[in-house]
Amino acid sequence: MKFFVDTADVAAIRELHELGMVDGVTTNPSLILKSGRDIIEVTKEICSFVDGPVSAEVVALQADAMIAEGRRLAEIAPNIAVKLPLTWDGLKACKVLTGEGKMVNVTLCFSPNQALLAAKAGATFISPFIGRLDDINLDGMELIRDIRQIYDNYDFKTQILAASIRTVNHVTESAVAGADVMTAPPEVIRKLANHPLTDAGLAQFMKDWEKTGQKIL
Ligand code: E4P
Image (tube, rainbow, N blue to C red; front, side, top):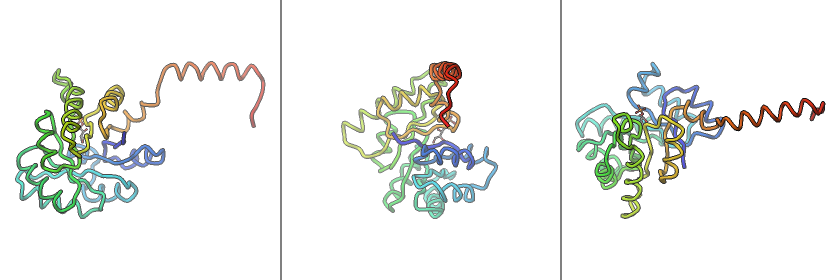
């Protein structure tokens, strides 16, 4: 499973990148706001050290304007994935931009039918939002499973990018369900290493080692 980091915080991306945990990055207008940076400038900086896909989202709502914004964003670096919302205008822009050879991430997907449309429009990635479905008492993971089944049934090449991941269990379940990629905030990725039995086991080993009176170096 590929790991994308869902943030525009360059320092956090760098830290995970040095550990080999960054296969790509996703941003959105809310994350750009949180970064306090200019979208072009921060995206360019991220692309200067991340080789994998870096999603940058358009903000226009009409297809023609989305296409123009998508082309501008794609000029930042060859690894830009233009992020488009799952609307008819977004799908139209997806068809045009993927036809030009650009990577496209279709975002704000909340149903299997929407994912089917994105695949037919040639999307490189589809982003089903798990956490936001869970927020309204629906089953975000069921959506990942349904999309996996549908894409496999018809051999669609669009990659399933599990998004709106809020917990470590979302990561595990997305991997089990066969999502190609997951994107999560840096703090969720950091938590993946945690286990209380690891902490307890390490504390015991340290205690016993001290009793041996030995040193390795
Ligand atoms: C993904 O591309 C989105 O930017 C992100 O995962 C949304 O997450 P949220 O629902 O926690 O805001």
